[in-house]
Image 1 (tube, rainbow, N blue to C red):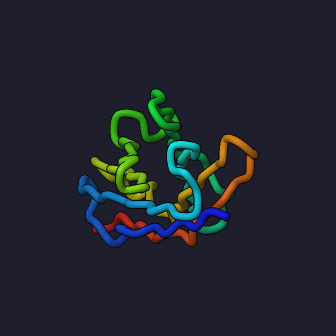
Image 2 (cartoon, helix red, strand yellow):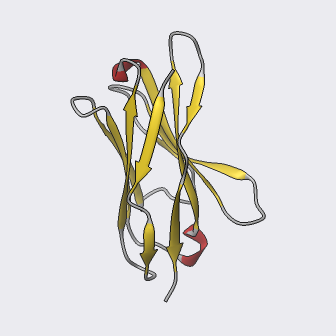
Length: 117
């Protein structure tokens, strides 16, 4: 069983930045593919970014060039650096981990990001 705890959400003005963190426990971190999703009110949960250990990151077109996913395998933590934020980035952001050995997905509780002036 993998436990994920997100942090770092909040209210930010358009053009601002935030960094989300996702701390994982309960598994060998290097075996986990780490992903970020987001869900705006009334909409489906959408893919934002993903990164496996030592792999090239992958991004949704809507965030390319503005968001950066990274991971610190010594701290068992994944990050999402979000720059040049727009009001349409407002959503609950969820961390997801996939155990590559058994294919099981795990979700964090989500953290709210609000971009507004």
